[in-house]
Length: 217
Ligand code: ADP
Ligand code: ADP
Ligand code: ZN
Image (cartoon, rainbow, N blue to C red; front, side, top):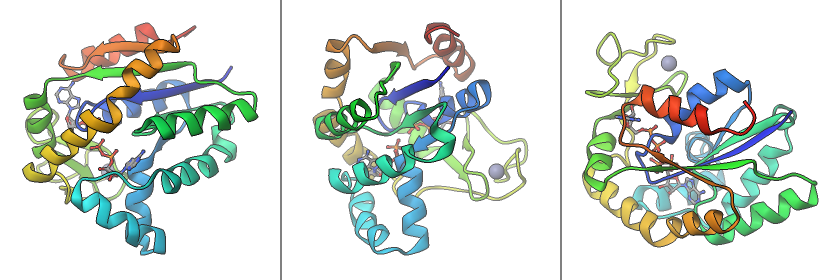
């Protein structure tokens, strides 16, 4: 059986947090365009340098760049049994490109899980978000704190705050979401693939809701 999922929702909605549970439950990889772009920035590749300017400004990286990265990633062996797309697609053009790439390979998306969260909750989630420098596990200083301040429970590495998780950039990213990504909710609803989730619930309850609505599991 293969399971191809899209996690859709604004920055801070809990996509990465829930992806961590789904990876364990289904043994399929998370494909996070944000993580892949940050890795390219850290590696100092030409693509990373270009992407960094967009990311720092809270803007989207050009569709062609992101679509290229995702197409390559989905060809890798570990995606054969399915994958969890986190943070992609983010524009209608990306969604169309994904649909044609999948159709070529005789594949399809099984479900699009859309997380709904109030704007002010998103801001407080993002300002308090921390990530692990070692294994990229996510935390929150109040809502999901590590056992030891600033240290990852899973691997013991240090936690850090992302450059773009500053209030001004956060507001810009939320505006970009409303303008460019929110239309995908209607796009996937029309396609009959959308499953809405109340993302305001505590992390464990969101996890249970997501598991309950996934097809055939
Ligand atoms: P996204 O990947 O959608 O941008 P994250 O999964 O990184 O969002 O979550 C953003 C922040 O909010 C993180 O600090 C995370 O610990 C926290 N968080 C995630 N889900 C919840 C929730 N249901 N309730 C409260 N805080 C949450
Ligand atoms: P979040 O879920 O908190 O918004 P991500 O890690 O998904 O953060 O994305 C961080 C940044 O990376 C975005 O603000 C954007 O600049 C870039 N990015 C990530 N995914 C995409 C995408 N699918 N299309 C364009 N830009 C992207
Ligand atoms: Zn870690």
